Image (tube, rainbow, N blue to C red; front, side, top):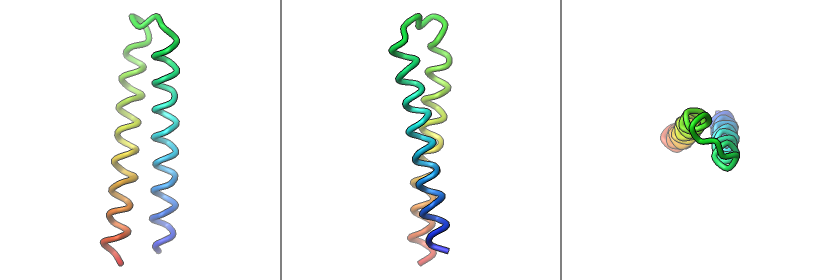
Length: 64
C-alpha cells in the first residue's frame, strides 16, 4: 500500500514539473498579451499537482 502512495506522488510531481515547464516555455516565447492566460493556467495546474503530491506523501506517512 505504501508503494501506491509513493507512485502516485511521483506521478503527481512529474505532472507538476510538466505543467511548470510548459508555463516557463510559454512565458519565454513572448507575445504575453496572448499567452499570459495560458501561462497562468499552467502555473495553476502546476501548483495543484504539486500540492496533491505533497498531500499524498502526507497520507503515506499518516497510514504507517
